[in-house]
Length: 418
Image (cartoon, rainbow, N blue to C red; front, side, top):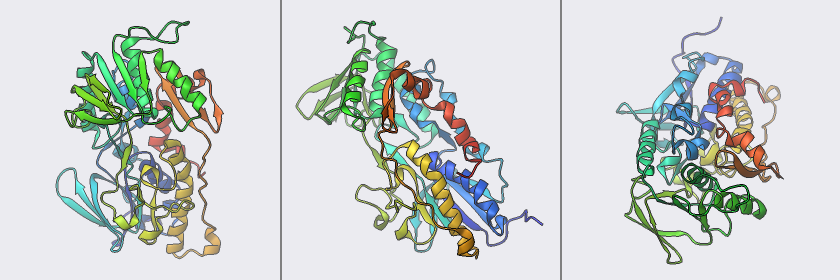
């Protein structure tokens, strides 16, 4: 007879992080690992996140501008609601932020959003806390309430802005420049390579020799041409050396700023957007488990955190096994899920001959990055092949992957054990 109430000594599988990696691995384990264990009711997945909402993060460059382009309501989904399909004996959502992990005593300290703290002892631990963006406009650096407030502040200032400076030549910077350029300036005519006299002066600054450094130079050059058609000027080979007032673009996303470049150039901006770099969310992790860049040292083949003891894993932007990219995180979910399931079965006393070998993750290092530039154009490549502008629009540019995330958040994407 199936057990319906939790045993006294329930084993906690703690998942830290409520974005692509955390939500996906929680669904995967609830569908394919927990039911296969000798006593399923003995295990509970506890998903911990500072935000009750998760979101389609790639949509930020469009949704931050206007609901006319992409309504805010479409990009968020409630985490407890999408997990209501599972027995409460096997799943619990904890609204809070991890403040410490002791891998020796195998415990996690959590600062609860409602106030107070909770300390959990874990049987297994998955670190999927992601990374914080320099600009608070590009992700859930805190929670959805904080992000919505930043977007509102930005939109209010955008209504009167005549000059915008964006730092960063990666996808976030290029996509934001393209969206703002088309929205504010329109697009040059068919036979014009550049938009003359744009209404709003938009400058994109990158320290690299080209924008979109993950892509080949010829594709980056096409991107620069598309940006020129919406009134964006690209400045390469120099970085932002200073911003006055300090905190413009980070603490205040709607304030004017004077931006000084490393080459001595000064740019006056009604809005400054630092679309540069991310910081892994690992301040709560013991330094001995981190790489030089602050990510969790993760076994590139098994996704285990070998230095933290048994049944500790990491996935996504917080982990060292791969470059940060959503498609690479999702490709790793079945491998991570299989290895966690294997470890749980072995711990439960199932014979190794019945469990099989580890699954091995192999990083896909082929050129893959799709970058919309405005609502109808874009550049990019996938699996090493360059895609035409129309395909970039069709796959990503229509709604910035919103068409793909329904199945991810609901768990339907993981119905089959891949």
